[in-house]
Image 1: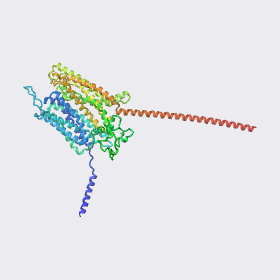
Image 2: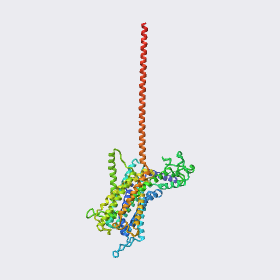
Image 3: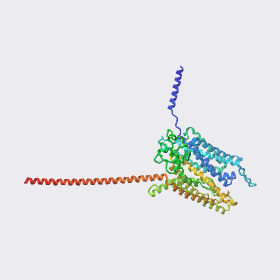
Image 4: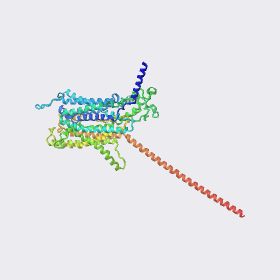
Length: 636
């Protein structure tokens, strides 16, 4: 009986297992995850970008900081926010995975915004209001500044994790077995960037308006609430996500190449006729390293095949032997660094927030009852970027192609250079506008009144913002395309990170230039160019200085562009043209040979016919002679 019961139980388990197998679980990922990932990114972007424009006003007003100190804090904070995505990508790829990176990044960003909101809610977290009787203002204590800076630091760290959102979203919809995979990926990227763009506009208009009209408590509370919703939306869909395992980071691969090449620095390079002495992947097209930066080639040289190579063909110790692909990836990165460095100057500015102080001093009224918030004027630059991209792609290039009678395309490297030229024009225009604004302030008697509103329209700022938008459209998009075409596919994450690194470096250079100009111009107790009162400060001269640096940067770009040589697209185009010419010439030679052979055949045919004709004639003559002889004999 016991055995019968065991058999019955076993049969039931088999039936249950069969039922379980017959009802397969739903595949994870797919389009169902798109709303959660896009909502996470869009809400986070509205929250973070909405805090930036008015931050200089909050620091100078509530924390009683001077313009120079507030600008330095914001520049360094921006540099950290732009640099952390590189760290976040490395940690996500090597240790945490992208799901945990985005989830933790969202949570940490929410904590940072909550701390910032608490500085507005709790009076003890910031300096007291200025005394009207004594006209004295107490500056922020070290503890109060530590709380504020910790909020900025948490938001910067959180941004590092949030930056993995795009790659994590692509993981959900990227299925190579799907015939419509490329279309689904294109749809995801389109919706992702569309909502990102909309969120930027909302941040620079709605959030800024709330801060201007409802105060800091509501103005900081709304972004914190949006960041909370962003985190909740992302975590809600956790059971639906594909969570790929961590893999070796490219940064680790770069470190290995450097370490191994240094270890093997005294090792002679084998001849190029022996590709078996270089370690490469089984499915790789690269069997030999290139001759450029040859000292790195020693990292992929096989010294002892028995000990260096494992049974599966991989390196026994990755820190003792690298692949040809890893070596070439590091070479590609080193080659683009000079051209990448030219884009650093795109982020060189007075501090970003100075344009807000400019706008505050100008007439911003659209109607008698409504005026544009000073922090919202950056929308002009964002709208210009969208309009210019559409105009360039849909009107300028087709018209130029129609005029020239062939397809016209500006290479990514040239667009980078055009972006630098427009950036220079942007700074020159900004210098002219600031010179005009300051003269108007002095003329109207507002030299010592920093809060006065001039009888000058704020739309004077529009030309420089439009030029800045065109510069960004040319250079930023050109940079991204340049990196993606020059790098192998395995380096796509590095290509996307280089733009942010350039912005981080630009913020650091801006901070350095700011400090130098402030210290040099205020030597000997003189009144420097950098003052809290922008009417007394000489920010017009500041613009001319960075415009001069921008001009030098254009010459540096020309030198780097010449040294880099032809890009991968140009090499591919030249190769195609050469191959087409070779094919055309070979076809021409074949035609010539065919014609010559036909002529020879024709001549031989004519000669044969001629010979045959002569033979026939000769034979007919002989036959006639024979007939005549016969007749003579008969007559005889």
